[in-house]
Amino acid sequence: MRIIDIIPGPAGPLLESDSCHGQCLVAELRWAGHDVLMVPVFTRLGGGVREDVPLFGEAIRVYARHIFGKSVGVVPDFLWHRLNVPWVWRVLSRRFAGSGEAFNNFMADALSMKGGRLSAEAESLCRWLAVQPKADAVLLSSPFLMGLAPFIKKALRVPVCCYMGGEAENFANFTGTSSPRLLAGIRSVIGASDRFIAVSGYQAERIRKWLGASDSAVSVINPGIEFTGVPADSGRMRSVGNDAGLCVFVHGAGDEALSKAAGYVKELRRAAGAADPEFIVRMSLTDGVSRDRCASGAREALGGRVRMVYSSLEASRVFSRGYSVVAFIHPKPYPAFDLSVLYAMISGAAVVIPDTGACPEISDLCPGVVMYGDGGGARAFAGAVSVLAADPARASSAGLLNEESVRKLFSVQFMGSQTAEILKRTAAVNRVRRVGVAAGRRRPAAQRR
Image 1 (tube, one colour):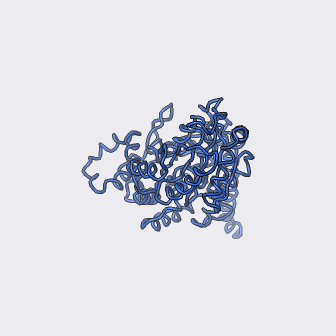
Image 2 (cartoon, rainbow, N blue to C red):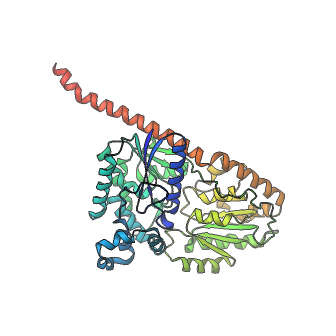
Image 3 (cartoon, helix red, strand yellow):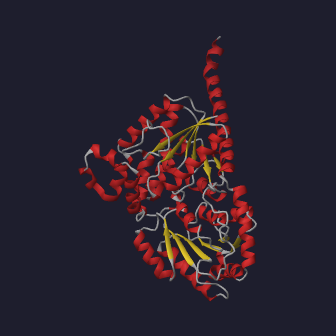
């Protein structure tokens, strides 16, 4: 099967996970024997990837305009393409992460290809794709790229599938004055995609509700993670009473998230046998504050050692320290699928997760996971964590089960095989439709005979 996979280059923390996911999936599909043309946009990937692919150099201009305003107009045209390098994107992304409103506006422009500049580059990309060998299907590996779907369908006349996970997976829950415009932009291009690949049943239902996609247009594939670099002995036998034994992961750094986490942690500290934990706080685009302010607020609210991360990939590097127990707190809006849970599990840690969002789906597949009722509040959280904290042998056993479950059910290989099957089915349906349309066009002439 011939596939065109369009992925974002590693343009800072905002797209790092999306890019990594796309590259891992391409490698797996190629290993399985499929002919995959990987097309990076925004920034180059290196490592032998074709260098003649159009890169959307104008995207960085639009990106910067939403951060710095009209002042970017003084930068000469020729300089923008020189600035289109990963380290510049990283700098801009860190500024961007402090404003959900700015992100909403950029996302809306990316979806609509507003202003002519992005539209011209989308058409240039499609002209380049049109002279490549004919593909059976096109995969957009990030919701950021949904705006390309109408251009691709018009130019190539092949089915387009969009992967809805990654760093932008919570787009439908964004709030603010620009949210109606953002949702309108998403709904305006949704008809150009033949299939949406959700990362969980929870997200699939949300896509149907928020975006109006039909049931038949949404498939679910749980994300897979790459195990390269995961230590063979993760240190899961470390006692929870040690300095780095217990970790609390907070998904979000806004006032509401930190207030909820502070209440949960206060109750946890009261519980018998619970050590003072380390904290990992993941910033979200909806937090609306800078990294420094997030870190300061988190330390003040939680009163312990705090590490700030932008993505699940950053979190995975922290989990490699070898925590014995990692407990998760998910404030609203709940993540479609928190990859950080999988990275904690593959490190050999026992994990404690709430019964919200996609977490029940993880619990159903992984017998070693401990789940608490989020409706029970701080006491339910503290009770679940304390059970593991008081029993290192149980925590170790749960960690072994978690690692085994992730390797079996959440590998890139498993994800790749499921993705290929969905692309095959979508391409087959598209061929049937085209045959039906062609037959319908010929029928009037036959009737005349």
